[in-house]
Length: 525
Image (tube, rainbow, N blue to C red; front, side):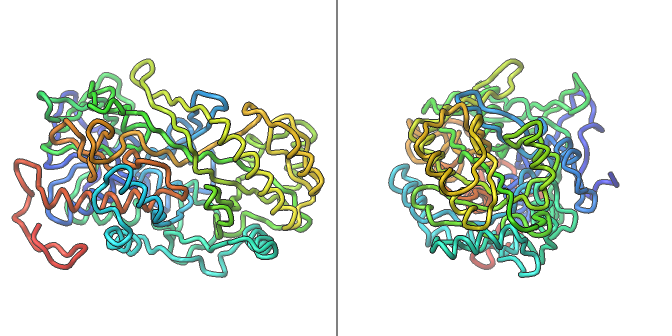
């Protein structure tokens, strides 16, 4: 790794017992923390970001899945819920957070979801009209747009052509990218910088305005004086026994929907609502591998160029997602000769997945040593929906020209045509046969205006804790049915504006107030 940019340092250089100070401490540097840091720093606020992972430049990423999984993901990207069936989930652990390793889909929160939050949870100013300026601002920084035609991959083209023939609604993906080269390495770090992750957008902006980032620093607990959050106790990665403290009048947790509630629980915080760590939604995903009649070389082209939205009102979205050979071999529902045959046809394999807006919730609790344990039991209703959605996806893939589809359920034979789908629909698929994964964790410190039902208020301030805020997907009162990145970023932009309006820090900005050109033109910091 080359030298760190100005404003970024590693905690491994700190001494035991050292104290770091700022006006605002932000724990996490992804879609929540990175955005908040940039917005506050531009206003002249002294911001310090704590990041558990390391820092890497775009040119340091390589098209090697195993290296990316070791360096950019928490726990090798293979954390798992406890329940039937288990759900594998992945979290980013690097400067830029999960935006560095996601597919880059940039979708606004669906209007029915915003209405649900307004009506059911009393969230202030959450209408499409009131949120539009925040979405506009985020999309401008992300360069959110459709793909260049030259970057389209054959697997995505086949998916769209099949959906069109069936008359199913299909939309081009909006992604945070500028002239994406279509190398299909989004999930392992974009080496070209074309994917406009937080690493290459908001983090440089935050640093340019004076924010500081300390890497390799794990937040262990928030320490309180009474009900006021005062400091964050941190452990230095790779240096057992070295503890440092980060002190600020305002502390913002932006660690994601698994780590944020775990940090609150390790801190001994107990919400009046009793809901810290509850209400976990996951958007369970499943995938299928179809061997097509033609060579498609799915790795040549963009990650998810289209989404099939025919069944969005049922909470289901389809997409084509290429998987590198090593990961496909590890996760495919095949072994022995069947796996050999599948991998021999890798150049013909179309991987497709589905997202389900779940109707049940799980919870995050603490395990030994304060590590988060995630409990999630898929409901019978959602299991039935997943099975039916998977059969619809297989139907679409046969329309696209699939010769066979590796059975998406453990213990079930491969599918060779529509008749096999009809037979599958007649069978009962047990939950234990479902192979599920997700990267969309939401809702464990939900926002709303009732302290007895919600952990945070409409702008992320934690009920019952002065100086403590949350700014990540934990705030979602419900799942949203689409990729959550832009929703997190818009809410963080909105939360930053509220912080600048209320200025809850006791000593203000590092600089004298200056003009800030933000959402609604020039304004005082």
